[in-house]
Length: 270
Ligand SMILES: C[S@@+](CC[C@H](N)C(=O)[O-])C[C@H]1O[C@@H](n2cnc3c(N)ncnc32)[C@H](O)[C@@H]1O
Image 1 (cartoon, rainbow, N blue to C red):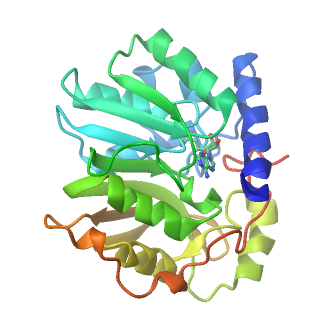
Image 2: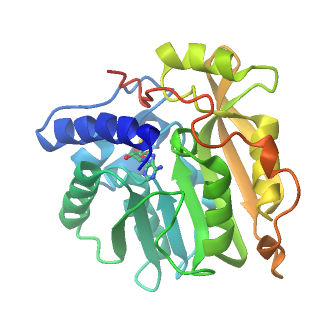
């Protein structure tokens, strides 16, 4: 485990323990958290799953899930997007949540039990090394987590590996203006939360393309700080095996700790 993983893990362990103890962990300011979901979506879930929402968007709103699909949520936290996905894919489908923080996994399990969800599963691990077989997933979603990853090219390679040919991604994440340097992002991250490790629009696109994904789009949904945005990222794994041979360009994406902060999403900065 890297120092980044440990810093991030400690932070989210504290957030999860807060919710497990009945406290609210997270700012709900319209930029992060449960206000980014509709009232109807929030009503579908246990209160603690809503309270633990630390995302910067609503990937379910863009992923267009269908009955029977297999969905993977990277950095599933308290499980809000896994539980919503489980409802969308129905009994013939399955929703997996992957998280590295034991306390978050415990909270997510408790929320799943409370929701009576039987087609969801929470896995422990890093999003840089997904513990699922190749080509086993129809849709990868994630909400405000890729910016926290220690090795982003590894995350993109792993997404391409686990997606079946023709599979797709619908990710919410914080993205920076192309003009912002890593130092400028780190500066803004110190007060806005969860943004110092953000990729730029170009880095995001190049990183996904380098992993073999196509039809990449990165669309702003709202601003979270000067030059920093919550964005919706979509892409597809080509129907015939292009993700097996990554293109040139992976070097354009910072890896292992570049521009990383002691991160905090949801305004939950310690
Ligand atoms: C900002 S929270 C988002 C949680 C959830 N997606 C949501 O919308 O509420 C980040 C979550 O990602 C997890 N996480 C961060 N980096 C990770 C990594 N490299 N591998 C696995 N999980 C990670 C943390 O433990 C935490 O639960």
